[in-house]
Image 1 (cartoon, rainbow, N blue to C red):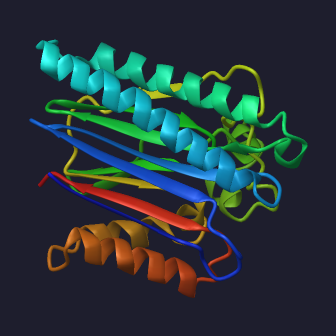
Image 2 (image 1 turned 60 degrees about the horizontal axis):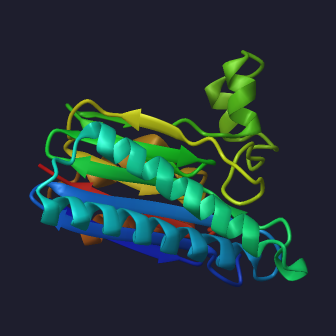
Length: 249
């Protein structure tokens, strides 16, 4: 398993409010997450950093305790762990937002816990997890966004959603409410590749372009991530851009 991640401020932003986390626990177990912060002059950075710390603390502690104690890390273990980490991150951010300078801050979160025979994912917001397997790119997570809601009720098509003027309105994130309900997913197997990203990538590039880049066998994981970020910046770089690529093939 090869994992590489990178974050970039983009062309139009003054600061980078994205954060990402990678932890490889060995024996086919790994954890990756991307956080896209929002709110105020400093709020986005504070929110995404708080989320990263909460996930890192909870996931690392529980996984190492399980490994040292000989406990089997199952799908159910991983799913409950991700939900618990999201709840703790939400509580931390919500508490910090009582500071008037940080009021209303929040962050998206997309996370993947990789097992030897499955991937358990968690999503809050509109950062995304894609997988590539059997020659196809598939979006695993579903955006918590107003535009996705319009697609779900048949008001607009997925094609219309891509350039919709309200596509940046999210319906759920960590930290803005006292509690949060996270969405979880299971891939049912370990795909050849996994891609986690903030919307700075997914809004800038087509899925076909993303697929073509990560399927390029002549490039390393680091080169592919760099090429994706460069392409997003050339497409205008309107937001921070964060990408994690996991290669299992």
